[in-house]
Image (cartoon, rainbow, N blue to C red; front, side, top):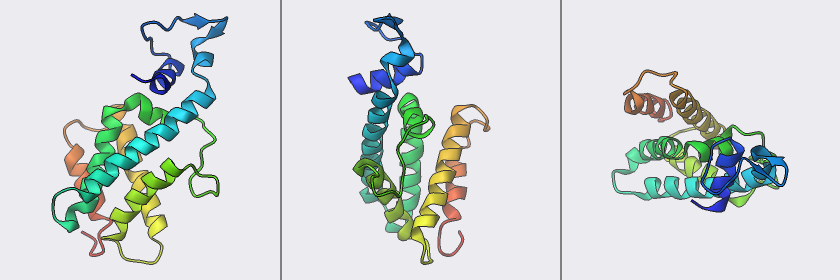
Length: 169
């Protein structure tokens, strides 16, 4: 596990071999401080962008692109719970849609946007993409906290994706 991911998990209170509970008089939360978590989040968005790009460009019919990207987002959140939390639920200074938005965040959003633009009509693809992003994040967050019935992930993704197709699904 690389240092940045370890820092995020340490900051969340997870124990790791070789990382004492207190370092130089500081608690575990200070060891994995805000800046380290922010760096982890930026790195995570780069990984998410790669996963979404691979799904978007992957094999399958073009009209299945949005579903593949949505599944990739869901899978990423499930496989990387500490990283996902650092990216989406920690209080960070990272902002989307700003002049200073880090490139990996822009890239992740752009991959979602490309998939949305391929199926959704209307002039404001960015807002439609934000709604999809929010829906996927909501599903991932609720699923992670056991607030959804188990075994229905694929069905929920299909329902969500259908709402974004030009023909309404």
